[in-house]
Image 1 (spheres, one colour):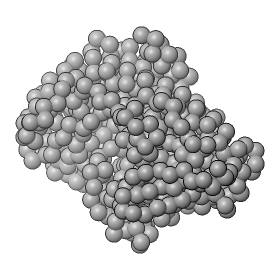
Image 2 (image 1 turned 180 degrees about the vertical axis):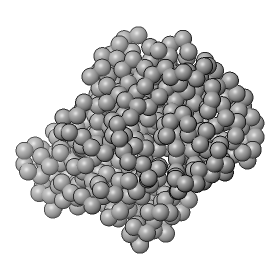
Image 3 (image 1 turned 90 degrees about the vertical axis):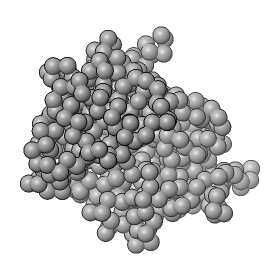
Image 4 (image 1 turned 120 degrees about the vertical axis):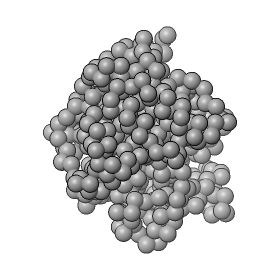
Length: 451
């Protein structure tokens, strides 16, 4: 077999599979830091937010504007400023993905012209990020059980963020990976269902929780495990200014409500005009322990959600009760995968983000770890192209680190998912005891695994 252990940057070629935020940030990082050529492939078409669509390369726009299930209401929180790169992660709970301790990494990875434009991706673009706390309410009496610090944090839309990060990246849509071939000359080839083949130095699977790359690498062992919880996640526009103001009274961006019978989240989703509350959109999440009934109709699911939320304190009760009768309600699959070793075939294939360590959203750490993965991968390739390390050894070190770090978070997030939905164990949940402090994480994960 040939070798590409220490190729210079211009002779390397990275194939990225997947077009979520982590893959797009990786593409920017490779261009900005290493200048390594890359090709970017995405299985599904992506809906780009209309206010950002004009900035997408024209060759991608017709595909990017097509609709797809991927365009759900999820959002995350990021921090706009930090004092140094050695940032201790602040305690926060922002489902599903807060960018807090990873922001200095993100700033180094994204194109320089995108960082000042991050406000374009905010759920409420009119807000100026500032130090704040995110409340966790007692759903029985409406008191605040815990205020979680969120310094300089602000909510951003996954869809808007993805649109922003897609700028300047040539994404080849409608390419579903079918096979990976390890060539005799030391290169690697991605084969797609549409007949296209692409060869390069290394493939990075950044293709989400149900990663095709991970599936090819380890087969059935790559399958995620579903939690026995019911979880709904919908976006609502109430069309009434007073109702919108009442729902937002819990917090201007994000609030959590815990109750013995139902867990609820209210988050602002979109603010087209701060003077027109009737047009504001909200992300409303409800969750409880139980098994899904696949035979329920949408109206039956909505009725069940409203019944569960009827016991909650205000404004959480009304946030659900005021959902229009035609509101689409689906039970989202909440699943995880505890990382197992995979064969990287001499450093020619690896994983990043949710493909490497898919976790539940209950500690809000998915994007933090994805950005950390990307930062470490870019630094790994920088060392390879400068001759400091060989590709096979460097990627093996990278794999080991992301499995350990991401695996610890998978365990802690899974435990938080169950404990946050159990009133008897709520206050002992990792989130309630230590927020998202990484120094506590390793000890928590070890204790959980030992049980």
